[in-house]
Image 1 (cartoon, one colour):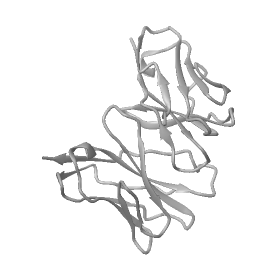
Image 2 (cartoon, each protein chain N blue to C red; image 1 turned 120 degrees about the horizontal axis):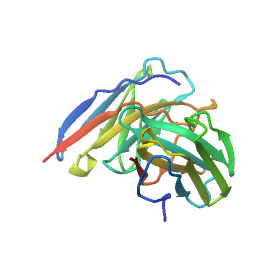
Image 3 (tube, rainbow over the protein chains, first blue to last red; image 1 turned 45 degrees about the vertical axis):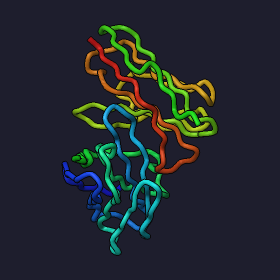
Image 4 (cartoon, chains in turn red, orange; image 1 turned 90 degrees about the vertical axis):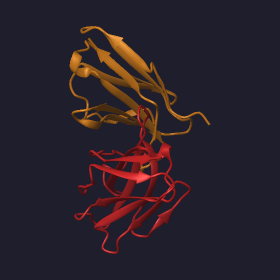
Length: 113
Length: 113
């Protein structure tokens, strides 16, 4: 699976959009981009995933660049409850590792009042 | 809908004692995963099951660790004998299919003195 690079930490004001970048320059054609988050003292929570098209759900939007080498998770109106560690994970849909998530260090997002 | 249920939430034990962690996956989910999280190593996959059968246990650290899934609604992770370096948060996750979307429990925090 492709390696991902994320900033260690980011800050965001409450009510503003939080844009979390992820670099996955070695991604291959059948690899998906998944995002999870982990709020303190809780288990990881799935947010969204995509292959090459932009995706949106009730939690967030995922923007994947045309060359697929990077992506951005967007929380449109961040709240204090969005303070968490956000993980970007690339997974090979056809490989034996599909379902076996490898979590990196992630980005610590702190939302300020 | 009940999520993945883990017990105990917290366990404090002494070195050498046997520890058993329990997990009830979401009904209808065919895949079950055990992860361990430490500050040093982050989130690591230990083992996963498909239809109650262990598929990949390559992440199990050593013979002191064992996991079973006697039926579709119950799994255990056992450590015998426990050591201080086993102190971590252990997460169980389940999934209805082999994909990147896993549903995690709240975790069991283990402290071995």
